[in-house]
Image: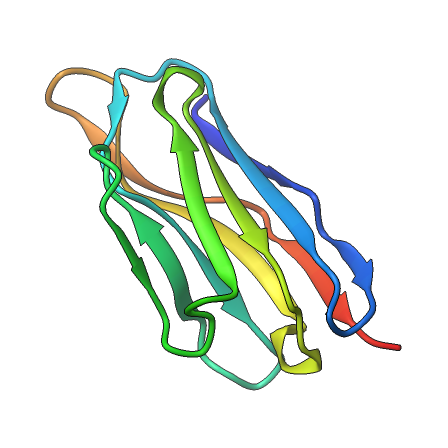
Length: 121
């Protein structure tokens, strides 16, 4: 079974840093873009950052200059380094792979289970 597993969430003070990781496991042929979304109660899930296989990145305006997304293609893993965290960054963060190929021509859209990030003093 193919799945995305996140780790690295937790409680941090404003101005602090956290690093999220998301590893894809199972029978994986390849993964195109990977990314991170976040969601707070009563709000829609929003894109935080994404990265292509070639390393091209895209960020939400609210996190530009503070968050950095990266990936290790050999490990099928994507990371999100979050610096200068603010209370408004508090959310459940989800890893996302819109096209996770398990064969040459078959893919699924995969989401992780979510990891809580809380920024509070």
